Image 1 (cartoon, rainbow, N blue to C red):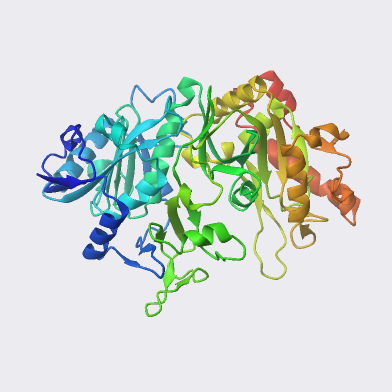
Image 2 (cartoon, rainbow, N blue to C red; image 1 turned 135 degrees about the vertical axis):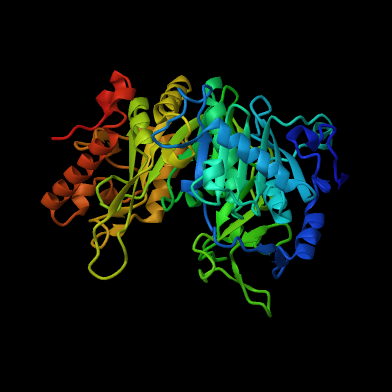
Length: 533
């Protein structure tokens, strides 16, 4: 076996059963990966230097093709209602066949860390057959320094071989595509898909499983920190403004997607960003746009003019979910450590298209657990004429697809950490006011930022609050510098009775959704839970 690269590990690839590979390239640098990817026809160079690739038929996660090995190790601690199972025998056969598939092939290996906290980081080895996959994960995770590579011993291994096709009968998969997770062996096998996000999410899933046992809270969130060291955590589903609101020029960005909260404070799982590219503009998001104009960024399924090499971010003909992967260092004002102290504020973002929720509300720790387990936002039903009915979305823990354990485990841990460190908790509505979608208007971003700034600097805690009659949380009565008319949503509706009916409808949705958690929470959370009238 031939070996080359920036740093060839002393703990070789034989330990993963891949000793019969033809060639192994270790920890290649971006320029070398570019050369290999171009020579293989895996991608092109767009104007100003990013590597442009296409992922084929899979332009997003294959959620239905992800399986967790069900054995004595996982039987009682995996949330099987939310996760598909695979037998140990099927996993063993899949591994055996993928190792045979790799014989005589040219492979790339990246040795990286998942997690910026040295106490809790996961030494991760990623083996890929596509060169650009190697650059992708190098951008997304945290690179060891040379001294750390000298002693690097992988705890967690991911093998990603898109050219291998799974056999449902032989491997227990659903299709030719499979993401097989073995928590006991700390290994993930990915086959039949070129979408690189599967590798990133595999790291997240492993940390989501391993960290709670160490009383470390894994979170699908963004984090920023003031120059004085006050950290803030932002939870939020797609479309709630998580990325936009956490990108504050007056604060340092710790990370935009996945973090842990340990005894040492909060820390980024990643060393990079995986941002949506569709409809990206230099005017709306200048920092992210700038990453698409430089060497080292990997762009997935972005359309390019073949003659000018100019990118068209508004063309969705390849994918609506076009993405860019780049190191966090490409973003100005980003943290160089990926770490911060214990958060002073927890922000839960929702885009309420029903027009019911106030622009900001203060939560108790038990209420925070309730809303964390609920994971509420709302989607507009559509933009065609006459369609005005919003659709509620509940994704528990603001990231249900990546939660292997029962949500109550994460919720209890979050509540305990909030109480232990006296963090203030806020529910921020970036959705509609003055009526539901189709009637009202989107919450003014200026007012949202003003309220958020007051929450983060602590001044919001000093104003007068009222108790919301529908949801029981506290709502500010007036805030300096903020239009007071939006603070009570009922007052913004032309028809107060219509608001009451809409509020009752939304409360009923919360009650129905939370029914599956009610037996898994304590009396304090039950008391904070909404009740049907």
